[in-house]
Length: 115
Image (cartoon, rainbow, N blue to C red; front, side, top):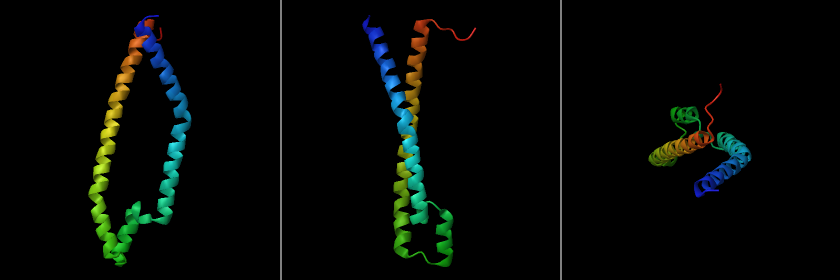
């Protein structure tokens, strides 16, 4: 087996291992995120519910320190959102690179698609 074929076989083994792991990790992460959001909504609705914040502002029951903390956290949350979007874009580039490897493997096999 040539070095290139061995590298491609290793690539396919790694992909199979990743897909097998993701079948259990993906739903676990989604479930954890939903539980976290539900807990926040029940215990601290001002973190997720803008209507709760508006209602407290109108009722004038939002103390100044909470308002100052929220104003201070806004730029930090915005920066984290930008970092998350950057990571999403980088992951899209990585996915495209992986797709290119798949196409090279398919071309090597000689599969031209359905007849």
